[in-house]
Image 1 (tube, rainbow, N blue to C red):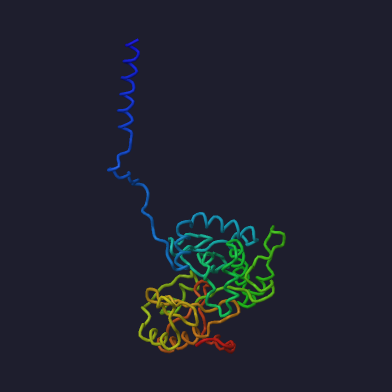
Image 2 (cartoon, one colour):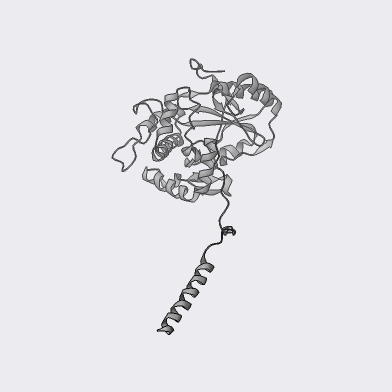
Length: 306
């Protein structure tokens, strides 16, 4: 009887020692996994957050965009364009661009991070317009931009492309209207065009949508005109009639057309800056050089800020 009891006692003692060895020590910090990147802060600016998200998922987004454009009926040879930010790869989605979409020579279409920016259309004077975009699903934003760019790529004027895009139907979606950001399916459509301003190589803009700065833009007249014609947002960044002005390396970018609305403050700024510096005005995302004479085609809308 004593032998089994002694064996059991030795077994219990061994089990306690093993448990003590396996028990985590409170004075030892948990191991760090060397293959995991440290957490990165999420940008507070919606446009920067959209770019950050797009860069993290650009491979998946490129494939999804290509498939969606094909489903909408975009010809295969018009899907994707050279992405100068990624070694000129041909891609349907450009993560670093911010306007929603663009057109390259050959009517080639790409979408970009602006799709995920809820404040993409915040510069529109009608808050109802920007709220439609803000509430829209990502798929509806994709379809909206694709329809607009497709019609502009066929040589239509901006306003005509807006009207046609409103009537565009998504293939295989039970004739669902592709463009959500319109008033009852009949009103002005919403699409952003920027003005890229600087001493730029016009051939690079028209042939490749590429910004090549020939010499840096003179900042003294830029700052003077921004102070005269513009304002500042809550973070102290320059604006022109609610549209944020981006000061890049040797050139600047400002919102110009948002649907049927034209940023007249940006147009006046561009005209005067061109007169003082001889700079080039471009709609880079659509491979076009802008003639300042077209700014006088229509009178400023009532209530447009200067």
